[in-house]
Image 1 (cartoon, rainbow, N blue to C red):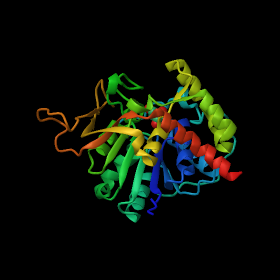
Image 2 (cartoon, rainbow, N blue to C red):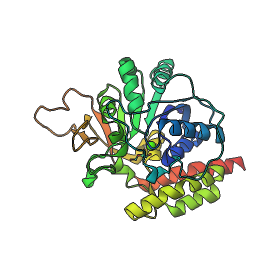
Image 3 (cartoon, rainbow, N blue to C red):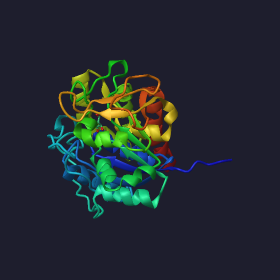
Length: 328
Ligand code: BDR
Ligand code: CA
């Protein structure tokens, strides 16, 4: 009998309500060995996302290093955080009064990523669910790490599958729009990238009834997710007229645990770095012929174009419900 070792994961994140849920998913699933958390600007300021990462790690006994990352994108001014989505505190405005005593690692996130990848050559999966600034900085500082990383899985992009557009502009998804230059560096580097974008995350709907099940059967994790998600679900209910919210960041985690949930399309990917369509992501599928263009000479990457949404949701919910049962 062969046993598969857990995937060694660095989680690069901007917590963020759905980031917090994805972190708990990584922490609880036995197929994952979380090596560390790196924070980035995005859903809130870097001070707030780092504070939230420290808070989550301490509250849920996630005993891994945390390294603070970039305060702003590589080449753009930082835009105002989306408080209407994640709350002023990034965690749904539920008044987390607890002040974390955990302190981040003294190294900046990009350096911590480089050191950790070099300590585990060929073994590390980078799961990045915010703007890609830290990964871009790591590539600029030490381009050779691209050959040492096992895989990069990002939540980001909108690739036009069945007409899917962006969520912060008609063209752009938030994480790519948050640092398009870094995204383009990540997509064009010689490491295997899989993009879990809006084309699939908008097909995975977590209903209020699912949150209620988590609250009732998922122990402290479930109660916490119920509480922090109220503001987030209100935003989605009003904007998209859905009874719940889309599953963004946890879909990237689900890909690492079970890639068979997704259908992939291969081809080089570029991000538009300025102008009206800034942050748009465009793939040149490997099975299509085009005249010479901006995709030439770049590695073929994977884009998720379909998902088994029911199975993904079951994986997410069962992870917490099973973990709670095993504590009984
Ligand atoms: C992405 O943007 C953020 O608001 C979420 O945390 C997610 O990573 C979805 O576009
Ligand atoms: Ca995020």
